[in-house]
Image (cartoon, rainbow, N blue to C red; front, top):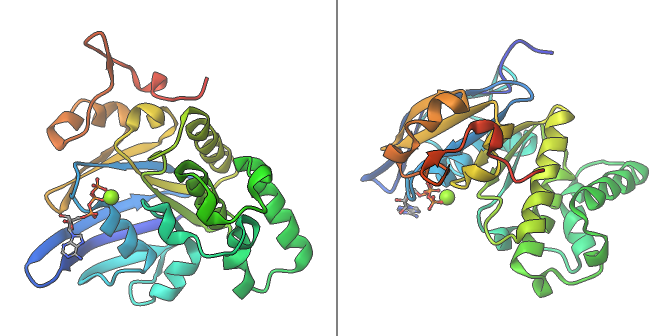
Length: 254
Ligand SMILES: Nc1ncnc2c1ncn2[C@@H]1O[C@H](COP(=O)(O)OP(=O)(O)OP(=O)(O)O)[C@@H](O)[C@H]1O
Ligand SMILES: [Mg+2]
């Protein structure tokens, strides 16, 4: 395994328009196989940060390395090796049927038929999508759409998987399914970055937690150490009868 981090971001800056500076020199590292939770108040720039990393927005400055390779000026390569499940799942669905939708991204890659079938089989099992395969994406519920969007990203087998608010709209079984998939992917060695406020659902599985505020990362550290300050940055610290819940219990998996 390479000693370089999977993702290494240095002094990334991004402004929406001329005036509105959103990211002001953000630095962050994600090691191979690590699971990192990114949080912070609404409008703080989490979604834009993920879009910059993926190569969908063009940062004004900074360095983005993937596996030690400087890809700052190569958004297409970043786009290929980094998967992003959008906060708004609808923007991602394009196919006529769920099955076609999941396969859409693979069509431009030279993936042999046999491997294609194996990959789709595995994401369909992981996210329990078999009953939906022949439905039109437009007829799905919000939660079903999100699971299909996640499948469409996973089937590409990105080196780094990023998910933006993956639990929005999902019911309890949907959340458990997505969480189980993430835990399984982590077990398989996938590097994962999740932007979410809903830390009570998954923080127990994270290796580190990052807080973004005022255009900068205020902390990246072990979840135990970050949890004490989250409320200063717009994130609720999970508690029960007024007592903070320990990190090990912050999961919706049994
Ligand atoms: N096209 C745009 N032009 C100018 N400002 C924009 C544009 N799009 C988004 N913004 C602003 O950029 C900031 C960062 O937005 P972003 O969606 O990244 O926040 P976020 O941290 O993901 O928030 P949330 O927790 O609500 O998902 C917000 O203040 C938003 O209003
Ligand atoms: Mg967002």
